[in-house]
Structures are given as C-alpha cells and as structure tokens.
Length: 190
Length: 144
Image (cartoon, rainbow over all chains, first blue to last red; front, side):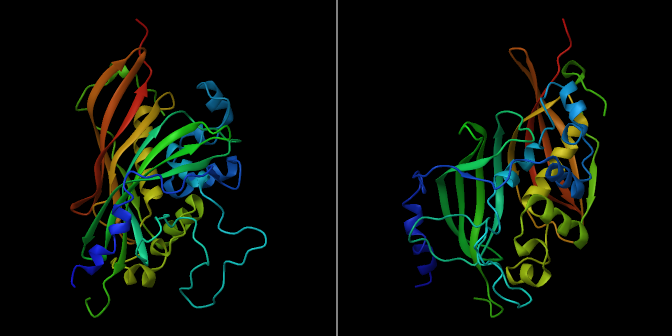
C-alpha cells in the first residue's frame, strides 16, 4: 500500500532506453537575434565581447556574434504563446499558463506530477552557434528512472538524452538532463 | 579579457571567483532572458508550495554563472567544449549570494588542440550548492 506511489512509475521504468517521442526536431520560434543574446548576458553581467561585438567575434574566427553555449537551450525552446492560442486563462495570483514550454514529456502511463526541477546536466558543445541560426530539440530518450521520496515530495529522478540541432538537422550539442518529477508533500505531511 | 595560452596553464591553477547576489529583480531579469518561466524561480508562494524555502535561481542562470567564470579565465580565444556533472545539490534562493569557483584539474593535447578540464562549483554560504562538475575547454597553443 505504502509503495503504491513507487509502482506508479513502472510504466516509465519500462521505457528506459526507448526513444519516447520519435518525431522531427521541434524548433525554437526565432532565429537567434543579437538583442536576445545581449539580454541573455544581462542577469549574468557577462562581459564577453564574442557575445555582443561582431567585429571582435570575427577577429577570433567566427562569422558573427557567438551565442553563449549555456544559452542554446533557451534558443531551442518553443514559444510560450503562438497566434490563435490562449494561454493566460486565469486571473488568480498564481495562475499558470495553459501550456508550458519546459515541462518534460513523459511516456504514456506516467503518473501525474505537479512539480519538477532540474537536478543534473551534461552537455557536449559540438560547435559554436551564431546569431542568425535557428535551433531545435531532437530526441527524448529515457536513460534512467529512479522513484524516490525526498524532503520536498514523492516522485522520481529521471535522465533524458536529447540533441540541439541546427536548421539542417545537424547536432550542435548533445544533452543529458536529469530531472526530479514529484508531487510535493502537503502541509499535513503526506 | 586577457588571452590565456594553453602552455601557460598548470594543473592546480585556480580561477578568479565570481559572485552573483540573487535578488527578486535579478531572478525576473534572468527568467525573461533565458525563458525559464517556471514560477518556482520568481514566485515565493509557488516555490514554497513545491517544498522549496523560497524562489530560487533556474538551471540556465546557474549554468551561465559557470560559463562567465570559465570564460573570464580562458579568454576570447578559448572554446568551451563540454559541461559535465552540473549537479544541483541545494536551492540557490533569493537573498543569497552564489560564488562560482574553479580549478584546473587536467591538461592534455588532442592533435593540435590544447585541452583543459576545469573543476567548477558554486558555493552558497557554507555549502557547495552546485557541483562540483567540470567544464572542458580548448585554448590556443603557443607556436613551436
């Protein structure tokens, strides 16, 4: 009885090693823009001229401004809103949009969870990415799933492998992303 | 930014620590910049409902802290090849200051390329909040 929540992850564990969504790459909505790269630098106070000065980038062998390597996921992420959609559906203080561009896609039969956060990341950067390029995500291969109760809730640690690809479908980065998917403990302490 | 040569690096060399005070304002700017709008990163009540003590820095923001720290060390002529074992140990919450540190732990050649493995970690108060992980970089090699 007490292990029912662990058993609920069985369909996910059975999908280890499987490509969960075998489909074409999903591309970010925009080509990488110099302004978007500049804004990426702002909260980091990241003063590297490769990322804002095309002349400096060219002097170092690049054809244009280089996107920070940690920004590639940002530029490969889908839009929050698209024409024809309504995503802001409630006026409650903490209302969430009707869709999330970040929520990981789990196999059919996975137990519902209300929260998740990233736990571990490995990324291999295969080449510099420049402004003007358009990036997408390809692949969603489940590498591991370990149900576990932590101090924040009950859920599972999963690791998913994917690629960031350019418009030609060539990989520019390979990612192994760890996530903890969980249902938080309630105030009653369940 | 000074250009470092691979030949000038020794295992054990350390990177200049970089500090990142985390305010609500900065977290909001980070969410807008890196497009991680998960409410756990800008909404106290939402974050606490998921078991966190407060709103906390998102992964891309924390990875960017490592990139800035390593880039400052390797200069414009260096190339970041890999981010490895970027492991979140604890939340990096609003009101705290993250300090990123690093140390060269390996140095080797692959053909014409001079490579380094830099051990990197984030400190937050008296704990290591992210890592230790590594960034693998290449640097210009001095002409023979």
